[in-house]
Image 1 (cartoon, rainbow, N blue to C red):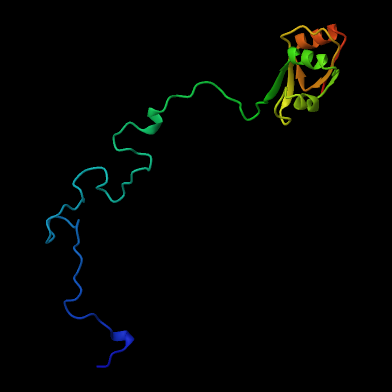
Image 2 (image 1 turned 120 degrees about the horizontal axis):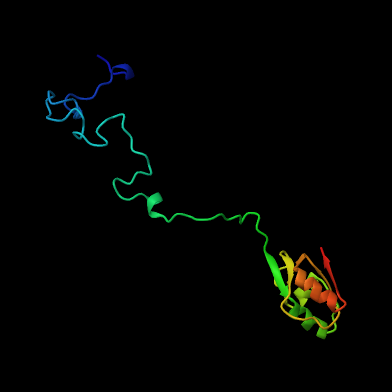
Length: 152
């Protein structure tokens, strides 16, 4: 008989049959037919979800409950300036105040954020200011000193 690719076989005794486990107690190797007797993974159709922690308190129960509502997606951040800052600029002789002038004098740090005017001081000098938002009391205090607050 000549050797060719259609009649190749391994030598006798060179390949050993693998041990078949889980075929019942009647098989030649004493094993249970349900592989690990009776527990969670003994059935072939049984699966354990990836989040299961085998009796340990699960992560979703260990974490604290989050309370309240947060709408940070639509939240606006403001550069807050006070009337005290306007008074300092008025003492320097600046009467027209915009975001560029506030940046130059280092009263605000970021131009990207909107500017909000708060009242915590009395204005004595007339100042015209352009801001994104202002409180009612701040507008009244500036107008009392013959100034203007323009909302952008």
